[in-house]
Amino acid sequence: MPRSDDELVAAWRGGDSDAASELIGRHYDGVVRFFRTKARAEMDDLIQQTFLRCASARDNYAGRGSFRAFVFGIARNVLLEYIRRRSRDLRVNPDAGVTSVRDLEIGASTALRQRSEQLAIVRALQTLPIELQLVLELFYWEELSVGELAEVLEIPEGTVKSRLFRARGLLRERLDDPSLGPASAESMEAVRQWAERLAARPE
Image (cartoon, rainbow, N blue to C red; front, side, top):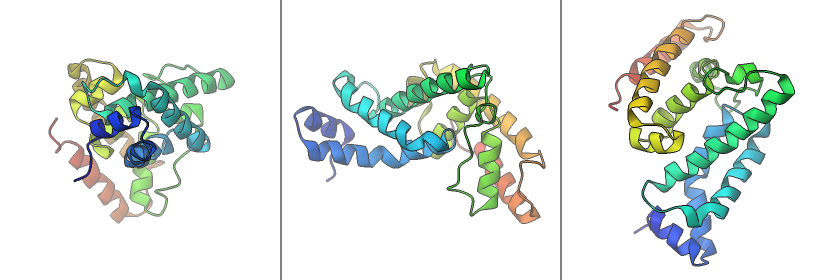
């Protein structure tokens, strides 16, 4: 049977490099997706920073929440530091509750360009305030629970639910913007179906 994250963390603390590699490999793709839609140009460096900090902070992981939430909490801090640096360069508001990825000109994801409906979703997500983009992507793409999101974002669970509600509404508005949507009617219908599924997942 595969070892759990907590078992791998314990082995890693004991000097088991194979456990470290397995643990990082298990969460690597999620961290890639996390940064791909927010900091494409600097993605590799930010991913490396995230896992280096995981290594440095592994003794601080107490196992009260999930290790996945621990990793995304670190990734979020790395992203916010990047945003603050980028904001100083561009002289824009660094408030993640107001500033969007497009405000920062961080760059769009290229991984989803083969499917126009997915690209439309990414473009629409990138127009949201970063804190709302985070909560949607982590909830729907990485399937973090409300409790895990509360841990990652350092906010109460009730606030997580209200942000999800607000983010879903704003995303639907953005998907109605023809400048962001795909050209074909078929692709737009696929986008709308995806948006409808946002409301279907229980919190």
